[in-house]
Image (cartoon, rainbow, N blue to C red; front, side, top):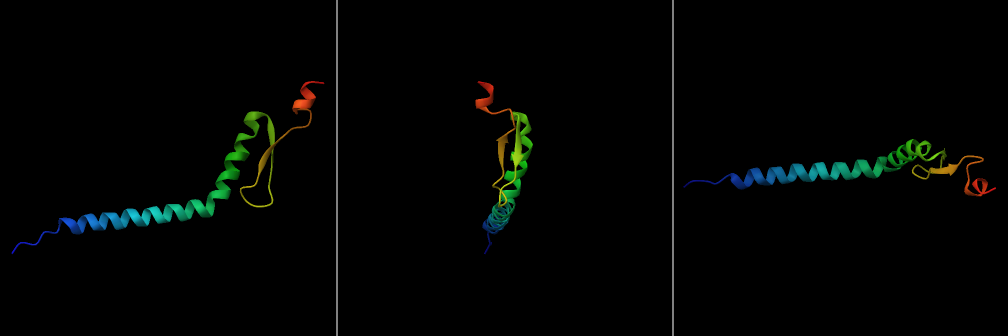
Length: 75
């Protein structure tokens, strides 16, 4: 009797992919606020604004610089 082991390799690959997926989701969940702050901090100067840190990680935002708001433009 011949034993077919092709299914065993497929199951091993599915387990590996599942573990990588769980690890990726955990890392993005844990570091997501830091990543969002880093992207926001680097994009604020591109639009001529300043970065203002938030109370929690991920809450930072871009705020207009003094003399750079819409109201100042129409004075």
